[in-house]
Length: 337
Length: 282
Image (cartoon, rainbow over the protein chains, first blue to last red):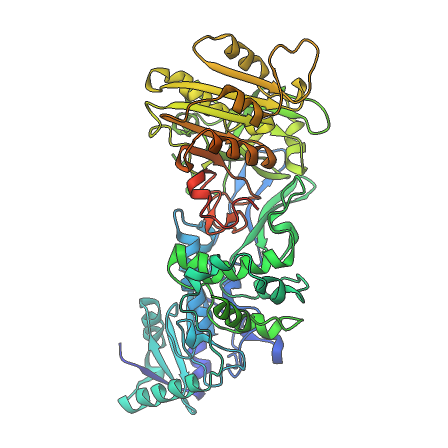
């Protein structure tokens, strides 16, 4: 399908056409933006940088019910997942992260909760024109207008949005929008290409990962791990807010006889994450946990799934309370190779 | 064998029989369990070395090695040390009570590849739990193997699991069964000494032999050292790893040792493989 044009004044009409689907978009103020359901009849403002919490929460909620049961019974009741959802204004790095995490949740055996939600979600992306100061997507396989993981890509062309369908789901949205869209001429498409290039030029940070996936395990005892983890508080922000981090814990919650088994985000930066019941911990300090985090993203994941588990969104750098910087860590890794 | 396509939904099972292997604060209790659903019972199949997530609804689940061989019948056995929240809840269960089971998980000992070879198991304490199905499997298919030698030890005779069946084995002239305890006791007529030392005393030939070991890390360290002294090659030695687990199917992340998920790529590894895993002995 060729690219379509949506006049910004018709944006509320476009959102209005998404009937029957739950619409999520970035909401909040300043740095506190996060994806949340949009009230019916409202059209979200897409002028924002990126959300603090990545949109992974829509397919992998921070806490989700796996099943409900009575502690004295045998019946196990699984949740009904049937709500179609559209996410508006997803940044290309975050959409790409879902394509990456799909591999983990799909290897060997499908994770039913994740894929059920994934099938029901349509990702409408918004190309970046003003990348953040710690963005480095272009060096890890992405870009300000990359489409991997997206169903539809929107680009802000001033008075209009350019809409390009990436998947069948995206084409369906364009079809449903119908006559509020106009055919976009070649010139508008070229305008978008130019903007994307300009945005890529504005990205100042990068990771030179050549040789890192193979070389990282060889740096196991290197002093750099002590150095880069010395100031770490173990707060877990870097992993909770990482769009490719997928680790979870499973817990039972009981209230009287009614109970549920649920899973919730967990972090490899926490002591309890790998602590054995015996008291032994194979990763006893933040040095080992930091080493695992970097190895997991830049070596183990590449080994297993042939892709780096980092999309360069910069959240872990922006939000670390003690300014630990993954780009700087990888620079030191590269230097030590 | 799935009767439910959601791998996180456990099966219900009933404790048919249960007994204590050892006493004390960290007692080990064995559960013989049978699936409630006949279809599940018929379709279940596991191999020695595999584990299962067992639990109590409302408390949680723990990954426990299946301590019986599929050759023993349509039931499962778990030997559980009382350690944390879930194992304490399991220890409350008596015959007739319910537990949940899902699995089986992980790879297994490559017993098919070992056909024609002599199998040597070296276990310590609760580490005998994953060894037991190997012993039972080889015993049940004895004509396909070159022989069986078992070395098993614990601190005291009271800390030995599966005592009765091993004492019977020790009487069997065909099998080479060596029980040991760390400290001399009255009325103990087997070996006295640490497992790695008994291994040297038994002096097994590495020729056409596979050595399998599981036990406390310190024991494994010296067993590996002594196996090397006896001339065993890295690919003749197998052991199992354990790590904290939640999902059992390679999703929740935590059980990795280097680039391997212990729940999926393990728990069984050859020493040759372990040497390549950066975190294997962490």
